[in-house]
Amino acid sequence: MRVLVVEDEERLAENVAGILRDHALCAVDIAPDGEEGLFQACSTSYDLLVLDLMLPKLTGLELLKRFRNEGRNSPVLVLTARDEKETVVELLNAGADDYLTKPFDLGEFVARSKALLRRGKGEHSPVIQLGPLEVNTVMRAVSVGGKRVALTAMEYRVIEYLALRRGALVSKEELLEHLYDFNWERFGNVIEVYISGLRRKLEGVAGERFIQTVRGLGYSLHQESALPAANPQGESL
Image (cartoon, rainbow, N blue to C red; front, top):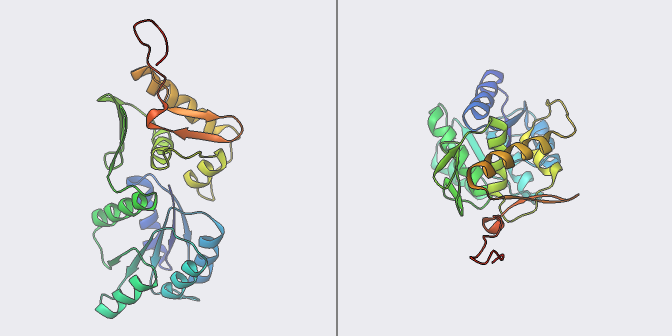
């Protein structure tokens, strides 16, 4: 998942970004003012925007309105020092999905961010079940048939993104865009390496193929994507 943090307080922005990277395994970009934030938000596909209300050059509220007017529907979590009823109503009416009043509890911030990331992909439960494959987005754990599968941090991020987009064909470019921020060092076949590692580990537990490749187009994860079982006569069902 990729998140944009729009915050002019440098220390707070770095702390928020660090929390998202460490506790939600997100790629994070930072914008120091409203104008830069609007530009980045409208030029890159983000899974979540964390938006300060009081920003230089362009307020968070105005950024939010313009962002929604552009037809962008990524979830937006607003950070504000103001909790007056009128302010909250205005934020929600402008298109904010949630808000936190400063100072906020870091655990609550992570939980709300993860919930918005899931909801942004149409998933409300923290546990995604695809047949024998289970992805627990809270524990950041993957299991097949109840057996825990040990994954690297990046392998988990790949399978989590595919699980949240299950049934859809996800291109390599989309994966790269949502898994890395602007500072990553490009490595041509990095996605293929992670997909290969995931297949080896998942199939090693269940003997089933969960990730399908459509050559030249991308990858898909389906509940029904496991290899067909054989009947007693050895014919595929």
